[in-house]
Image (tube, rainbow, N blue to C red; front, side, top):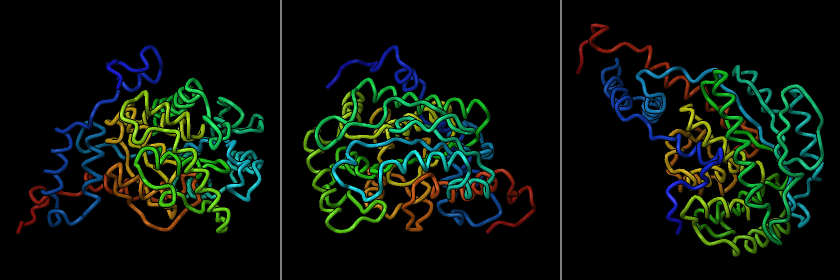
Length: 363
């Protein structure tokens, strides 16, 4: 175990970890007290009261600002493990979908338009160059990972660089005024890497954590489980230090997983709430939590995906999903759909009268 009190010293990752602090307990307590004085029975808003208090703790003030405008960052990367036949979809679909996101033609674009959220697409590891496009950030670390079933998916330096891409995107969006950051992803084969990360960081069995992704048949699922099993066997279970977490990420993860871990860290450092999407975001959040446990105090789980690894990740993180719609698309779609719940919790805390101010008699 490392005894270095400042892991990754002199790097953006190290500086970001050092900047992350726990939620403000005074603001959170004030929110709880106000919620109990509001014109409603105590606790009657259920989980939304927890959300409202968390938002106050993140912002350090009660009531907190509304989580708007929101921005979803869709991080895209390709995977060398595609060569193992873990998905029937051709690898070029990743680049094609990146172009589709940039053109506004994907489900995430439709949901974001409905909610008034911005969409930023980030090429962090797409195998085929997509080319300049409006709304596309070209931050490619390498043209797809290596095959994680045969050896490390990327080097430690590449993993850290990809994490720092995510930190940079979160920092820029927060500085531009985004009041809520939403995780999105795209990458053919990325549920294989996600399952491997979930197994490594939670100790789950590959058969329990590996799902059908885009809808694979039984033989493909068996092959996918076998790939995850071989890969996870190379990694010590439940990495306990930041250095071990980065090493596990480099061994098993995708470039978009790494960037999403950084996105969570960057949001936490900026004290902006971050809404997690499905299994890719969940596996990335496990990495972020191992790098800096306090970062997860600033995260909310938008939904629980139909992918089995998503539920395993959220339970390990202690996060309760706001929605359960059996979604398994990715892109940030499920997290976006939960955004009105988060905004409603903040608005209620700000706008609802108290018994005293409204002249309403309490029980």
